[in-house]
Image (cartoon, rainbow, N blue to C red; front, side, top):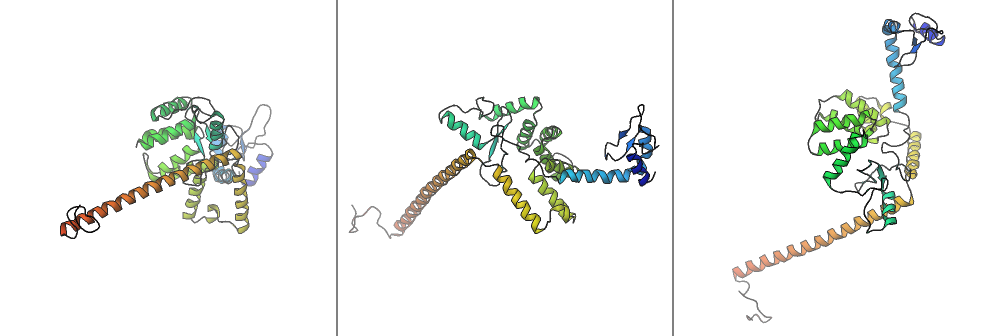
Length: 328
């Protein structure tokens, strides 16, 4: 059947293979890949597959591109469950702008955490701002809480456990946790799997699987995944897909970026950032003081060594002397 006949069959609600019309007894089902044509049964779909295969693959690629290049609703980090503002993407080398609570696996922004601690007072016990459970800072207890959440199919817990297994050099367990997290829709798990497939760590190197996981992570709003996809398109000399745009489009992207950054701001987060800066200055001052002490000690040691050498050569008297050069 030609493309024109195939299109007409789809328009007339007919089977693309045999042309039979839909009625009360015959229900037509769409091609699950492209949704362009309908069939009355599996046999017709198999018979029509050689003719439809090329158009189907082309339409599937178009649908994937529509999803891939669509503006994500938010980043892969999502929103803070307390203030309901988007979690900002960390662009500095300082502390992260949010933390994952091990008891509930919710990502809480620093603004809400700081405001909660101020409300309770400095000397109060540290509790999770969302779950209201006392927080633990012991590595083993945190891992046990992640494991409990993983048993409840929490993708964030599986991602965190994968990171911890990777730190221990257990690539197999990390791959298993991230695979489960990716199946549950965690964008960060998709990205970590793409890195493993790219480097061949714990798994056989596979660039096709890397690209598939990068696309899933990029669709969910992971900027690192989208950047890696752009680099791959540049290597394949497909600059239009990599992100080479006109000056007007670039200016529009900058405005959209600024609007997204403004949407993440709040007085509580600004107060938390100010506290973070103050702590950085205190740490820097402490380092400067320690540096001055070390420098003074080094100078003193050098002076003692020089004086000892001078005494050995006879340039200085053997014992302490007064201003007239006589021994005391």
